Amino acid sequence: MDTNKRATALSKAIGTQAETLLELVAKELGHRDSLDRFISYGDIYTRAHPISPILHIVSGNTPAAAIQTLTRGLLIGAFNQIKLPSEGIQEVEDFVEKLPSELKSLIEITRSRQTSTEWLRSARAVIVFGSDETVNEIESKLFPSQIFIPHNHKVSIAVIDSDENKEAAKLTALDIAKYDQQGCLSPHDIYVHPKEQPRSFAAKLADALSELNTKYPPTGRTIEENIKIDDLRRSYSFRSSNDTSVQIWKSDSNTDWTVVYEEDPQFAASPLGRFVFVKPLPNSLNDALNINKEHLSTIALYPFSIKRAETLSLCGATRICPLGSSQDPSIFWHHDGLQTLAPLVHWTDAG
Image (cartoon, rainbow, N blue to C red):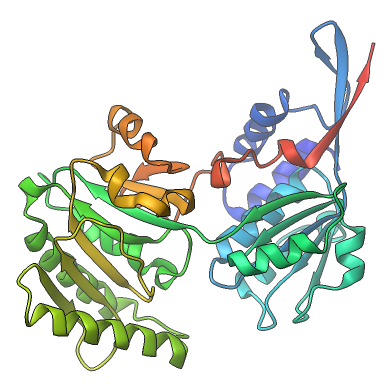
């Protein structure tokens, strides 16, 4: 299959336009036909070849990321080995079933608890999604000649400058609830401009999460996850009884969702599971994020504008998007600030 046919088949499986995938190829590789023939390049010609095989090691909390990385490998025509968690990822398996046999033949899947040494040694490129510990462990087993693309622990936030349309709370709830806040794109902290009364916004967000929870309650939580949430709830409940700068809202009789208002602007890490902090937006968000800047992925912004995104880009985020779309990045997204196709090809020059 040439690039056009691969793009057409993939577009049907992921529900996008083939033209969009071809535009991604053109933007990253210079021309949509770069993988199929020599293309004029200055005073020479050049052609891209997929680096193959590619090993994808994915986590179960973000099925969309697993499908995206596999889509990219298939789009360039590489052979793809993908290690799923032992329990599998149904969304990935459903995606594979939608593919024609020509693309299925480019995929090998394992659900083994351990990544096989054979796969690690034979892969020419390794893409890993996981904790810092997982990423470091995999990297230690690779050769210098192998391309290594890590997607380790990341955190995200939201910034609300104004809320004239009174829709920010519902949009924030959507970003928090999707994937039960488990992904790197899920906001931990919501920074609200003081003029919008952050404490009042926290109450509105609690109402929005409660309403959303009736339609989409969390599923699959572990006992350990619920214990972490309950422990932190108790800590903030105790603080709120003695400190007026702290207030907590929470779901009744379960740990489904939690909103904590806290005047301290310093970034606070969530235990996840729809547990979010609302804080006043400080004069220097850069200082409030402090040491977490190196792990900052996405800032969801409301209202969104490129001009405002320019100022927030100084905080170190690799993506700034409209509030409500945190969990739905564009196909053109530079994941963790990196190109997604260009690192996975090598070039032959002619002329």
